[in-house]
Length: 480
Ligand code: AMP
Ligand code: MG
Image 1: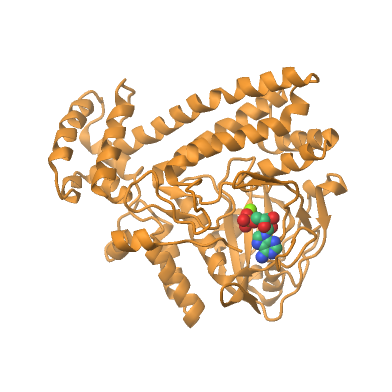
Image 2: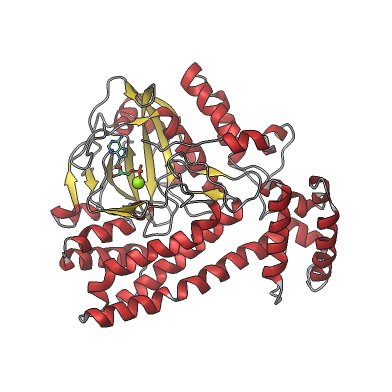
């Protein structure tokens, strides 16, 4: 049964929200990965999607029934500089489906050819970044972190030219929507208040039902963004390119480019080759999210009040809450990691001193929390004296908890993953696929990461960090 797009709400917005165009066909489409479970959740037929006709749709060679393909317009601050027009330069929204839980989801092809927003780009994606996004977005989902999903990866048969010639590929991405902070900025920069209002109303209906005012919309976006970044920090995720065009208004992780997971805990960790100044370092992410939200506040000004000064006052007033909301979300995430069910005054300090021990010792973030959960973390410290002192305080703190030890351990093992997308494992999977057309390592990695909290024998290599030396040299590249 082919997919049918029955109700494309974004395509009903005015023409200036997008450009209408079909994906550009490719030479020899071949399916390399289909997410069958996700297809079923979306009410799509995995068997059809894997059939030659289905693959033609996933490659952009055939337009499905009811699909009204569009490339979305948006703007954005890239590394702090405002670009008034970005837009989907290599992606096309095929349409929307309502999934089996009643949630409306966008289905988009990424790497589907040039659009009016391509600027100098070729509109295409290379296989490596497509598989990388597949692996990491699905890992984030399994970790319980709001994210876009990956439905399929198709190779095109057409080479793309990057640093080297690479196989081209198309990713089918699924999102609550592809509306970004930069979408609001696009219309704000044009002084198009009518479009801003239409967009805000669309976002309220779709993502924040029940919202009574644009001020409240801003508050709710801030809440979700704060929650999201708190969850990122909890698993050591570094987005790598938190430009405002890469910030989903629905609060999902979106636009996986040079992202990576940190090994040894250090707030200054950066992997992205294009992030020379560490603007988007691990520990900067909360602050940057606040900066991005301030840009959203600016874009929303015309909707907040008729009078400009009054609007600025409202925006500032709302923005002031971000620090507190983020702090609370982060502390809640930390409490879960430390197995603390109750709230005590010194919890933040206790958590921070553990993190400082990790930073001082170059200890692996994921392993440290996992082994704190099973009681074997001491062995990770070469010089355990500092840890021993900390542990005395931790034990005193745990004595204030009503839960018994078994309950706490179980909760901690369900909050602290054993398997994350380790950089060397991701690279190994991509290299085998690209160089040898061998998708075994990719498939195995995806399967391991689908159950990140469940220890299974024989998977030790997936839980091990790359060496400190490798980690220092590791660089990620933008998906372009
Ligand atoms: P990104 O850094 O991937 O979030 O992309 C930033 C902007 O560049 C977006 O407008 C993209 O659509 C555009 N872009 C990225 N790669 C390409 C490409 N290969 N061809 C055309 N546009 C691209
Ligand atoms: Mg982007």
